[in-house]
Length: 362
Image (cartoon, rainbow, N blue to C red):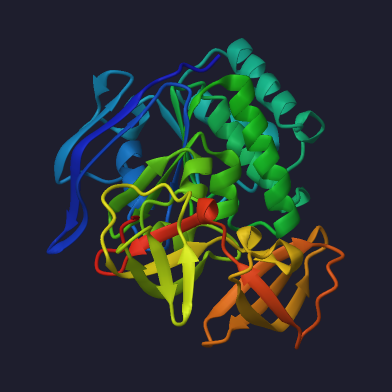
């Protein structure tokens, strides 16, 4: 069975000439943890993964795997296995040969190779495909072979660099389940890079949301979703994105959020610190907006622009009286039509408030 290694990133900086991609970044991944590095293109997540793998040299700092400083070790000596976005299979080799080739090069005895390939193939449902070549496989099967090739290494850390990006939606969903099951069965340490928030929320024990080479928030998925630490995290995580309403905080008496002529009571909102008066932005997830009979008496008015049936539920796209866009998530059989006017209100316990100057959560 694989080892369960801790990964420590200690004040790592990576620069390409004058360009600073990462600057004194520190991160600890616990043994058996599934950590997802999430962020938009260019945020530094793949750069960090490649540095852990030894495919990029660090400018400063150290990388420790399993308690050992591997900062300047070759990739093969780091106790890691990596799955790339591209399958990178040998086209003239069978599935069995693709999975076993690295072990053969390393001089692993043939009985041990057969045992490891057999175990990995069984876990990934590849047993009946071992004698096929990549051209005879579907995209999902090829990616499972790529995962199996890493799995037979039986290392302390598995690294995934956007392994599902080239697959269609159904295959992505299927392989997400496979990877989740694989982690539960192995208990191995896994670090997974993606820009897909659904992958992050469904797979991770913790998510590191990155922007501009900086980890904006490191927390379990539920906390990332419900209590984003700043407006960037709030906007990036969630589909559709969190609604934002510009306004200001009035703290003369009981704190309220003022948006135009409307005053939204904040009783029940858990402030992160002192309550500053002044310009702020209110955020609320589409599923938390109350409508119809559930809306509070002091509700706002929203006009429906578009209704988008999604099967399991319905997305409703509206505009408030001042033109601010607002999205709602409702049950699948919701009887709402374009042109309808809905009373809407925002329960304080479901809100997020952000400072306009810094973007930080209030």
